[in-house]
Length: 444
Image (cartoon, rainbow, N blue to C red; front, side, top):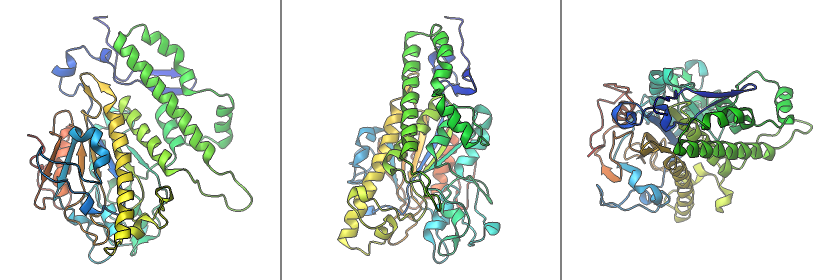
């Protein structure tokens, strides 16, 4: 066993399936985890929520390590020591000249570049987003440069907010000024892309034939997995078992989502109506598994499109999110926003706890990651772009010191993105329209 070395890229194969392994201790000599820079992958993840946050319930009391979770942040209590709550950061590039704060703010969310005012796709112009700068630099390290996920679909045509193109409101990831990275909203397609032989041209008949054989992806690789386990130590064997169990459970949940979708009938095909609660958790699980087996190191997730007016009826609400966000200082609207905000933070907490449960050497997946939480505006009623709601979770492999609340005096979010890129080994001096250098106070 001393001479045994398993490549990080080792794959289990079978009957057209392709499955990458999680990071195992035997992939490197035991001393390499601590001694070799970059031995454990660093990841960047983004969790976007629409329509801003009701800020009076958001901002914690106290600063530094002497801070308490606010009512909205209470769902993050299990991971409080893994958080940096950053108050007072501004996002001025997301401020439009007149109207359209949601589309303009979403289009500039990760690029910090003011978008071109247009509803014509041919005239759309934004900036390269932070995640895609990282993806370009890290693309040789993984099979997928990045993963873009979301709950709500829609293309980039037409106007979505005050004559701003829908391309801005429906995308946070941009490979270039005119190239939004369309997000995947179908968990089945994401699962197949990550863990099966991905064939975008497969017909419905071919897909159904695969289902008819009832051949799980795991069934294809069981024999290889059993042979591999004989070469692993006890801890790696346990980790491999846990990994396959997670994939199996996720596969079943994804299949259940598919069964919930409506069937076709005469007339136009109905839209896919899946429960946003279960779909969000499945998308979070897919991100975790993609990181766990090092298929990608960059992922973004949009809980909803910019200016989303989703009705959260399961929270006892009857109007849409965007409608409530224009609260006009009415207490009943404040109460509705408080429910929506807390639910959103519960989903974010679920993602972080899942990441924290994955062990990597002496640390966890969350320790080796930076996860950014934010929205396109601060308060949805005033459409503010200063004092944005920002949480940075994880340690980035030691790049930041969490467990604190830090106040800034209007420094740009672009500086935070410069620091996040540096944590994964991508050094940039400037970023976006107003990024001038790394953000201070991220590490004690």
